[in-house]
Length: 168
Image (cartoon, rainbow, N blue to C red):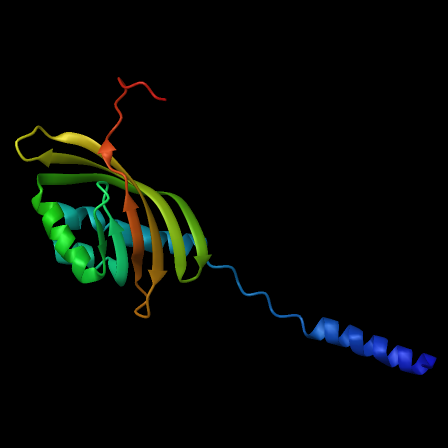
């Protein structure tokens, strides 16, 4: 191979290496995604407080899975609505206080995972109102309608800590 051929090959390799680099896709806007998820998350408490099972179920995708603290599992929006009806009928009232995303993992501009908690006061039938906290995890997907919905949720409800309770 002569020097001229080596120069042409080197020039071709350099041009190819510089010209064929795929463009780096823009990073998803975490702030915008967090804002959109917070807006959807804010709908859960009022839907449960109003005992509106249809509104609650609409926050999930058609094929979603919803797992309650007692391990009751509902898959599919119709089953989630049915389970939500039984769930909201099981207590006298629920007054939401705070719902917050504690950790957000942005997978893409249309997929995210959140670890969150909700504080509320629950009045079970025949009992005094009690403060509670529900830590939960959600997998979210943005649909063709540009609305974020939960595809998978698992809950771990329990009594809220008070200052009198020792922390582990």
